[in-house]
Amino acid sequence: MDMGRESRWEKDAKTVEIIFALMTAAVLAGVVFAVAWALALALDLSGSAERGVLVGGAMLAAVAGVLRLVRVLLRFDEQRRMGH
Image (spheres, rainbow, N blue to C red):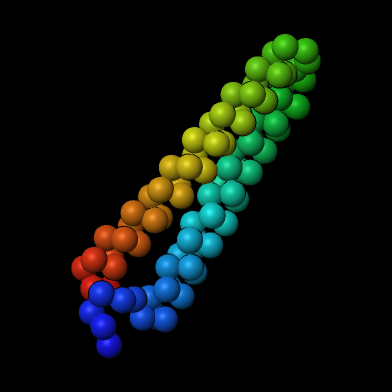
């Protein structure tokens, strides 16, 4: 086998890890936004206060999702480089 090329197994492992990272990031973002939405409903907010909580929740959800995605992919790359 050519040392410069990836095996089929390595390509499949990368694909699985990317899908796992995307799915867990999406779930985390959804949970964070749902908590913000529940908070807005529980506090019976209306108008700009409700919008502010929802926008803040959406921003936190996006940040949490991106951080999760990056963390999973960096951890996978580190393990791959160590030969695991």
